[in-house]
Length: 413
Image (cartoon, rainbow, N blue to C red; front, side, top):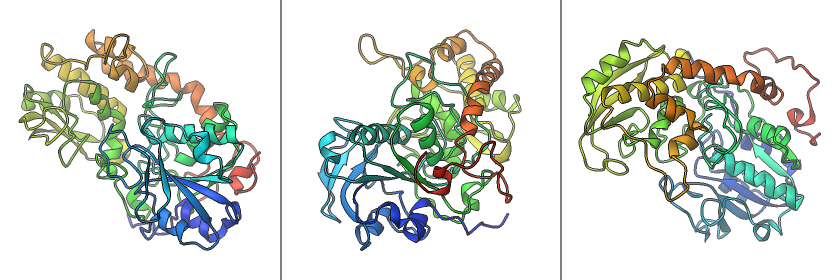
């Protein structure tokens, strides 16, 4: 399929036709190194040098403003060397912009890459930004970007009460099938945040498009998200972060490799391939992580290969992987223990429930779990539909209601 070169992210649209949203205002920018336009120019640089924009503060999420921090590493406030602007960390002592950091601003711009998955902490950084802006009564302008794994096929369960966290802060499925702008509309309205929100849509994107069909450059949005294929498998294989197996961190193919020193890779690959999961094949693999779990130890396991990406069901893949490893090595497999008294198992936070852990331990059929999870989406899907901004094909989508002002780029309803 030829590349679709007409897609433009929200930053291009803002500077091309929606500068009225920021003209003459003192603005803060929430972004990172992957916030770039269609020519790979940094959103920071574009706004900093634009004569119509008064950029006065920067805010950085997990991995830092310039993408120089590993996963889970806290980031401190600083001064940006390139612009001299203050940088307020949203992954340090606080995850929400403080009232002091935004007291002198007239608006907040958010340009952050999403990968279409509930565990992605960027989503909850955005949620906290919306909350802070609502309290300060200043608008938020979200510059939208394509979902790299398409805007189709929501998959997974919804977070249950008692299991909300920074890897699952709202009742959304593992694979969201939404853009970050659509998620902002959902969070702000359906979940009651109530900020003055403007979403600047990406131009030319359609829901069925994969990243390589957009013509846009891929900038790894985190050190462990090197390719769009990684992003496709992430909603399933990220569940292994809650286990004593390596999820491939410290290799060149994180979230595509899963293994541990005590795995028989041939038996595991055979067992998984016999299940004939759509769109993927499992290859026996050996690897040595350079950091994270099993650092410098030879691991064995499987490399998940995407054969037909439109058929891949990543959450289902993750569930079958957990089940297969648990059956193959029940005495070695373990969930990472909670940190401290009263703490939660990390797998429970990723899964948004403690039932997955108990179901896998009891040997429940992973397809039963997967079907149960997807059945639970029936009440969520009509809510999600209200906030979708993009058509599925070249024809204009006929919404069930008249288009609201956020879809047209005007004042919020």
